[in-house]
Length: 341
Image (cartoon, rainbow, N blue to C red):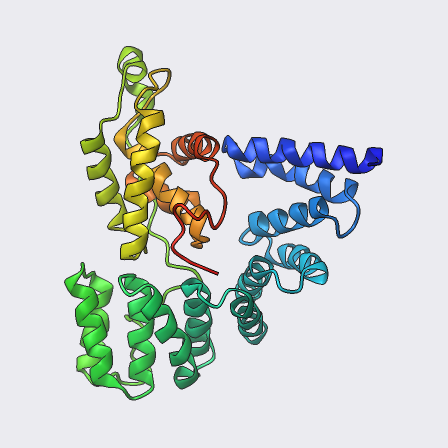
């Protein structure tokens, strides 16, 4: 092994160590850029750097992120994460037909991923007006994540635009029984009015990823007395309650909710004994929920999840870093993943 390869491998380990402790991802960007330059073109370390750069920059700089994703795909043409990231880049840039093609590639490599199917179907229906073509993909997504309210809304919208109005109503009514929203009520009113063309603006229009909840300002943990913070200890009942409440606002299906409860039990063995820092049921529950996002490749950010649990992003980031390191979590982890490839 030459010196350059050894340096690249060591730098990658440093990056993984940093990410495992959930430092702000923007702090890792310089290290990733350095690794991309240092590693041999097309090596595992080189492609690791470019894929993470693409995923971290996709919303901030989709044009540059697309370039990085393409570099990954040059060497790994079957990489579903590379194709999905490229698809999101093109969606944000307004290149919808390119995005559709990229999602097709992602689904070829990961045909059971309901998020890819949803994103493709949503683009075909809303962005390109091809509702009948979209139904194949949205039905696949709906079967794979039936309890996800955003997927149900997208599916119902496409059904209505394809002329299958009664089916669309049944989908929305079922979704509302599990927990409706004003958007679902607006969608149902539109359907009951006959789904008039040009009047579906109130309909929930999920973005190419599950829609984000508005940010919620959490309690100011810094004002809590130090003695109380350092002696906090999470108990199982509190964690279960916090997890149930927070997941109600997340686009998780029943299997993902069940796996989150399993992961929470494993997490509690580690975290229940920690008294050296502020611990709340909500912060640990948020970390558990984000672990499912991480394992299943659900396209949500830490900010999306933190908002549902009313905790600071930094708090979620710290707990998830410890959880990831303690349980040795990895994308697609067989212990907790529900999306099988």
